[in-house]
Image (cartoon, rainbow, N blue to C red; front, top):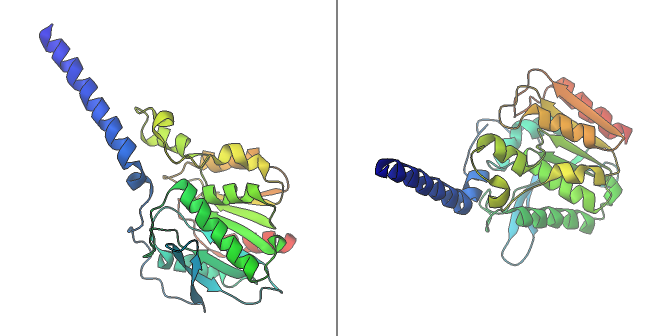
Length: 266
């Protein structure tokens, strides 16, 4: 009986230690600024490196591909939870071919920026990017929000605050809570989470065109989440669902044409 008591006590203590660790370390599990993918891609576009001021301490390193703010719409790209700006070169090499301006920002704590990423801080960073565009006389109806993975949660939040031209979500999730339940089914994630990015409860607040892109072989964010967001979204809505893509979608001619047609339509 004593042995059983000690065993149960040890299990409880170990479980509590795991919970405490996850609670205090969770943002290190969610944000990975030093992860480096696609580092060998060569730049095939012209861009300016600019710094967007959030406050006196935070200035976001960003890449601006400017063709004509008056003639073309501007795609504001909110990247995912890992890597730096150069990890998106493969994507920009293709998007550059479209008749659009592109502003790719890096979050605080990423790409050498000061600060620490949190849900609210990323919203502040995104709003600073929108403010900067408005200072360049770019109107809301000329702005297309583009959210990649974690950035989709930022795009949805920013997208519900004001009306923009349209919004594109690549490999989006429904919420961090739903995602965490997949990776940590044994933990009370609802009670532990600091950052939630609850896109599934916000998507219906967006009343302008939405394009959702997701690959069925995504082993990071289940394809079912992108599909659920699409089903919850208001019309007009469009989808690009593929059988072969994983989390990092291939920017081939088919995907590029889908984005091109979507942008031209609205």
